[in-house]
Length: 145
Ligand SMILES: [Zn+2]
Image (cartoon, rainbow, N blue to C red; front, side, top):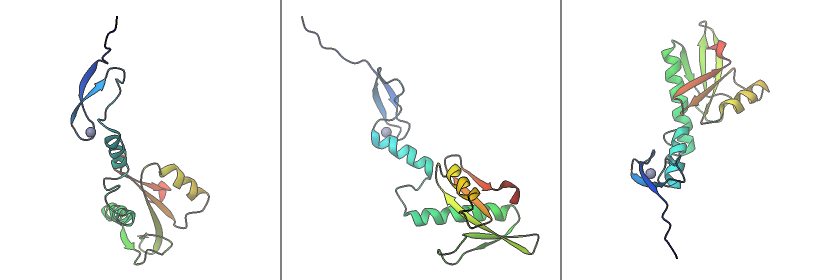
């Protein structure tokens, strides 16, 4: 006697594209309709432009986001005119002292960059990390901002 075994399926909505797809009951945690959707979703967690814009442009957007945040905190903000400088931004503190800022963008860069800073391998006074996955900017060391 032969019988055809059919894997039971359940329809669900892809977390990336919204398309309804059939997932196997043997994979109850499946949330994406395809590998492409899975990759696309996690790339967007890094920043909304990953894979769509050149990295230089994405870096520039990060710098502008930090500049806007610092302007909102009441600082006078200065921006480097050349990409080949020791820092991306500078702020005027106490009306006379400039503090330099290095901006880093992306997911999972926080701990790595804080480590580099502690090892004195970041030449700027302050590290600003744009974390797109949580839509926040982290400053290190925090007390300088
Ligand atoms: Zn999908």
